[in-house]
Length: 352
Ligand code: KG4
Ligand code: ZN
Image 1 (tube, rainbow, N blue to C red):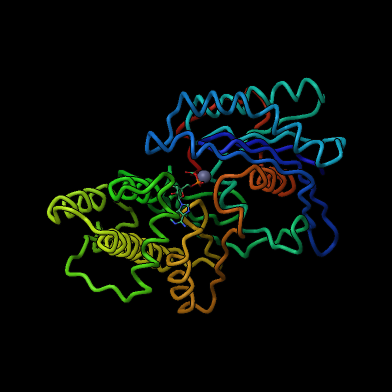
Image 2 (cartoon, rainbow, N blue to C red):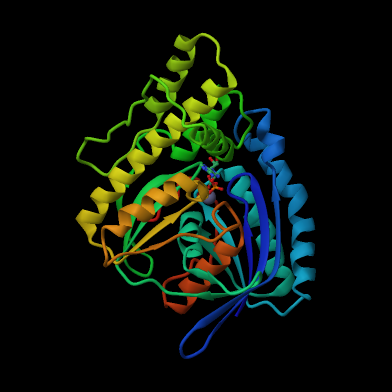
């Protein structure tokens, strides 16, 4: 099955042509063409995604990226078009959907709408063989997913393919959003996640000692919900009280912030593991690229011999179209409903 996948929910415009083939014992998955354009630089001056700009950038870039990915794949006969229909910024989502509908007319093939978060989960089931060759390794169920991105922070249980139950979610900011906002407070560019991670690493390398602590919001509350806006505000007050920051101060704050965010994610995930007894833990979304969080997740899962930890490989943690292709393929082949008619953008589309 050859799938053309499109992702435009935030500030990455992405088009991929993927091919999945099922044999008796395995599913091979090839990335035939992949074109991705990150608008991050364009949004940097706003310190976050500026929706009107994202919409315009998607509109300009989609035709070029499609041509590039389709040519890379040697213009194959396609079987399906998969497009992200939510959650995300509606004006941005609409660009992908409208472009997908033009291609449906051109190629006269079916279309399916895919939940962006389902894409992030599905990316974790890809195992790398070479740069373009992968296999899809289905997880053991039940699966618990921790989705951490710029727009979402959610714990979701999946007892079988795509049968979701929401376990916990943020009550305010997403964790990636907190990384971005704290980076901005520290004068670092958007997207803030990698900047904070690099600064925290510098502080760690010189065995930083500092005499402040940041809060770990909701860590002792007995839900699996999160809250990150108070942590960001605590950084704001800390900076104000310190009256002028040196570069090492900034790195120290980044380290303390990253540890605070990590601690909350770990404690809540541990609580959810105890409640749901999954066989697989998936950590997905842009923030899952974070080394400190990954290391702590590995340590956590090390205490549960029955649980396998899966996360997306390099290049697949952040938004991309390959993950949308995987999700579409898995939905099709596991006999789950695929949304085909009247695909509309749903900014707040949820999994559960
Ligand atoms: O999944 P994603 O690409 O887009 C959304 O669906 O939101 O996630 C983007 C988020 C941004 O907030 C970015 O700062 C964060 O992922 N991020 C990181 C790292 N790399 C990206 N956060 C922490 N550590 C990182 N290494
Ligand atoms: Zn995402």
